[in-house]
Image 1 (cartoon, rainbow over the protein chains, first blue to last red):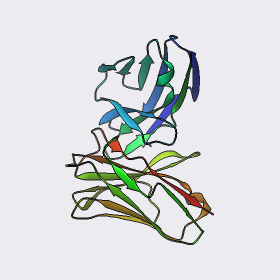
Image 2: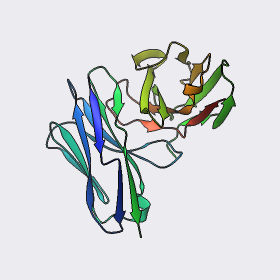
Image 3: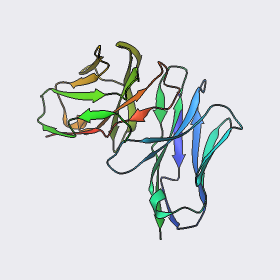
Image 4: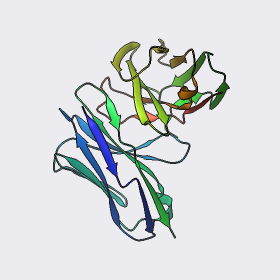
Length: 109
Length: 114
C-alpha cells in the first residue's frame, strides 16, 4: 500500500535556527512528490513538486530534496512567518494524491 | 488567494441530513478535486473530475457523491450524515487531467454534524 510518513509531528525552532523536515514514502510507482504549506483554517498552498531522485528545488528559505525513499524540506534561517503545517504528498500510479499527516512548525522570535 | 472559491464557509447540520458543498475552480482549470480533512485522518482524497467526467476515485463513501457541471463548477453531496462526517472539506483545481501537477486549494467548507 502506498504510504507517506512525516517526521517530526511538531517542531519548535528559534528564529534563525535552521532545520529539516522529513517525508518517508513507499509507493509502487512515484509520479510526483509534493510539498504544501497549510496555515490554520486555510487550504494547503503549493510549494514544490519533485519528480525524480536527486532533484532539488528552492524557494526563498525553503529547499526540497528527493531520494528514492524520502524527501526533505530544509528551512534555512526561518522567520516567525514560516510557522505553519507542512504537508508532503505523493502522486501514485492510480492517479491519487496521498498526503502525510504533516509537520507543525513553530518559529519563535 | 488561490482563485478557487468554495461555499458555504461553515455548515452546521444534524445527523441524517443531506448537504451540498459547492466549488468554483480557477479560471481555465478543467480538473476539480475534493478532499476531506479531519484531525485523526489528515487530508484524504475523495474524488476527481476532469471536464465533467469522473477521472479518479479515492476513499469516498457511498453516501457521498459529486458532479462537475458544464461551467466546470463542482458540487459534493453528502447524505445520511453521521457525526464522523464532521470535517473540513477542500476543493482543489488544476489545468491538467492528471493529478501529477500542482493543485490549487480553496479555503474549505467546515462541516459540523450535531
